Figure 1 (tube, helix red, strand yellow):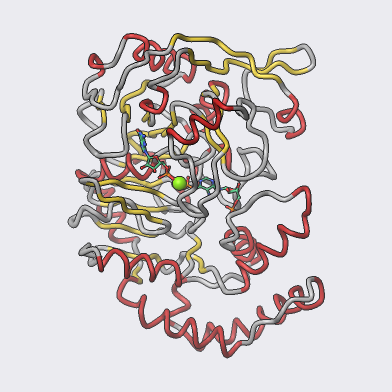
Figure 2 (spheres, rainbow, N blue to C red):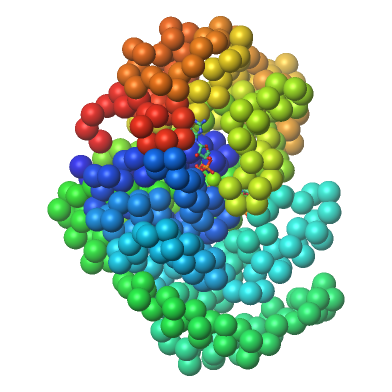
Length: 427
Ligand code: GDP
Ligand code: IMO
Ligand code: MG
């Protein structure tokens, strides 16, 4: 048992929600450790689709404790609508715990996100407009509001007296926008305080107890390694740390308790928003994969850019996260292709690079070097054992293992729980 750190190995939307839900069956705790409602995780159970932005994907297992950890930025309005939808669907939320230390998205954060994006003009990032960047910036500046502040409304009001003028100054003087009033924010957040009170607790004893007993704890990743603030394609990244180091910091768990670092990778590549995507497919093949893979964002509905599997990215993600096990998802999306490609390096100014470079302009202008593999042109959706896969599909998976440098222990061949090949019995 022990702690499984589950991280996205690419640019997000790798299928972390499906994988976490599946492994959560044996988990005492599933903990979301960073990011906000920029994330969208889809779980399909018995043909019913659930979409989570903030609530951990373990919530459909009634015995599992689901924690929103200290590293998360949380929009109370979005969380409450997720709670309402889940309760209407009959889910039991007694086991939902929200850390007092998690930060809150305040009403001015999404407004500033939108204004800052539009001020960037051609250099915009393509954020989700959920206020995630501005909220993390305030956390770092130590002018953020934490969930625990909802239980000390006098303190929250005093802090607003200091912070709100700073925000309104920018809104009014820089952007000519409408300022927020303290009264409207206070009345809105007082209502949230009432409605969220039943979930707000210090997760420290719960998490430490589970860790000490060696129970299964899953840290549910959000976003992906290439969107990591430090390790990703800066500035085209999110404002948090989706990599394994960030997951531990956002959960309050030390590295010695981790038994598996599970990297979730799609069998090809997608990205939402702007920034480099070296293996991008822009023609009809890209369009085909987007449709077949339903590559439209869970959170914003934007179409996802698609590309071939990028092995230098995978090897980089394996290295920086310490990934020792891979979950490879959406293999079925490639079922009909006659021929497949895997990027094995980048050519830049006559030289071959084998990993993503820090310099963004470099990444933008390089030319991927591909290896071609035959397709299998048959359905993998009913495969439940590795041996059930067509030979070419097995060769594709084995080549990814080899290039990425970690074992593929889980293969997903459809959105449902059962559409999974487990190559490892003990997790
Ligand atoms: P996350 O953000 O990493 O949790 O991923 P998303 O939920 O945003 O996107 C993954 C999408 O692919 C969801 O709609 C899943 O239901 C779906 N999905 C997951 N695994 C598979 C798979 O193996 N095959 C297919 N066809 N769809 C999958
Ligand atoms: P999950 O958890 C895919 C992207 C946005 C944008 C960039 C910055 O579902 O994998 P932000 O709003 O975070 O400031 O936007 O990050 N992004 C994601 N892309 N999946 C996600 O989450 C993402 N969360 C943020 O599209 O390019
Ligand atoms: Mg997603």
